[in-house]
Amino acid sequence: MIVIPAQLIESHEDESPEWLAALPAQLDEYLARWDLTQTGGFLNGAASLIVPVVRRDGTEAMLKLQPWNDESEAEALALRTWSPDDVVAVLEDDPATCTLLLERLHPETLNAVPDHVEATRILSELMARLNQVPAPPEVRKLADIAAEMVEDAADLKLDSSEQRLVNRYADQVRELLPEPGDRLLHWDLHYGNVMASDRQPWLVIDPKPLAGDPAFELFQALHNRWDDLLATGNLDQAIRDRFDLMRDITGIDRDRALAWTAARILQNTIWDEELDPTQRTIATALKLG
Image 1 (cartoon, rainbow, N blue to C red):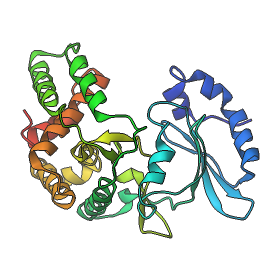
Image 2 (image 1 turned 90 degrees about the horizontal axis):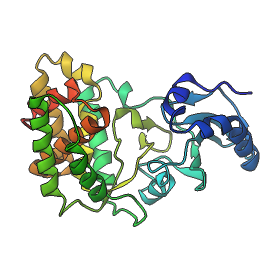
Image 3 (image 1 turned 120 degrees about the vertical axis):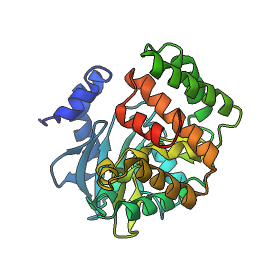
């Protein structure tokens, strides 16, 4: 018997109850299939169960169990497409269930780097290298995601000022649709998804692969390590400084960076059915409307 973490139950009990019910048996199955021995307690985020294991040859690894869905189905493909110098290594995978055996990394993430500016620099350098890689044809397309945003924005029911804002963002996204880009994007690249390792100082984990414009990647780092931005005493300027640092290192065009950042805010507003105050602050600081 295993005790499924409460966070996983909360995340999946409505959308993936069958996966939750099968999780104990699935763990036993992959421990046996890949000849693994569990060596520690469970780790988890909202989406997956992570199990420290050791292989028969003594190699330490992490077994990742997660539901099969649009976000997870190309994870192994993306990690094997990028340079191994930048991302966690996939040791085994089962495409039928999106179960992965990954190299063991250290628990520290970029959140542990005391200087948030230095952490942003490291993140941006990784982003720049990842974004040079063309996306495999199997990966979901930003063009499709963005077109859905435009359609869904019309169904939002916000107060008048917020509705005008998201309508403006939807118009901007519509203008971007003819050139959505073709690079392999991570889609969730923030400080917590970069971990320390022995073979490289830092490696990227947990992509939600997407083919599109690298400018779509900047937003996630803007609202993470928020307390560091607040601590500067000038929040708007700190947001702009972080945004500009990422652009400078990645070489992303400013106008496209602003437009795709507005698209990310639109996307989150559609998901949440409301405009998050933190994201409204980012929009104001960047003069997105």
